[in-house]
Length: 255
Picture 1: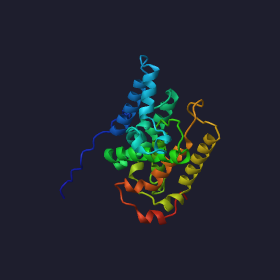
Picture 2 (picture 1 turned 45 degrees about the horizontal axis):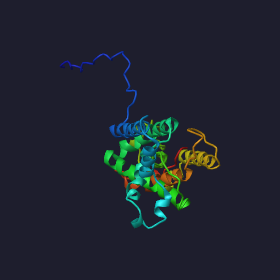
Picture 3 (picture 1 turned 30 degrees about the vertical axis):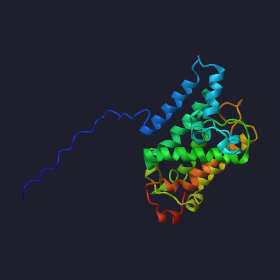
Picture 4 (picture 1 turned 120 degrees about the vertical axis):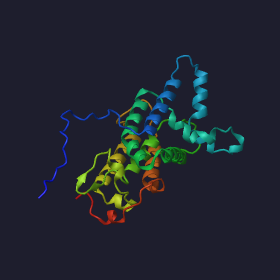
């Protein structure tokens, strides 16, 4: 009998594997860079009050713009449903939104890709703004911040990021590989429902003036958060590149 030559096994590298500190998709890094750049630009010391007021008026969302004939106004109504999401009022505001963006935008961007992520940002920003406008029709206050988009990303993540896969919980880094749950399937997941309940409770506190994080001196547009969350949760399938796994909805979840 001929001797069989076993494949040579390389010794394992005893050195620990290095994990990148920020393992984020490039489009998320670009998003964060844009937010920081806009914030830095808005805080240039040499800006006069008149210049800052013009910038806020020109790029913030204001419900009153849509309560009058658009033909009698400037063109701000075209871009402000999106550009307001790039503005922030203070350091706490942008830091809080950026942290949540890194957590929830990463799995969504990995799943749907950069181009669809940009489209998702634009449409979820508009959905959040017009939810705010519907409840405060004709109001002349200015809406700024990416919180509505962040809420939409949270809603989208509920459709795929929380399920139990093969009896184990997957990390957020691998969550984009999960099958997409249908709306009813997601609502049958105790993990998703618990998360939604906590999210609603947090926004309810904000609605009553109790701010859990961020700048408590500034009013928070909780209604825009709800508009964004509903957009992401209900319409995520329109952006998803992965087919829905029908058997996933029928399988028991979070047991």
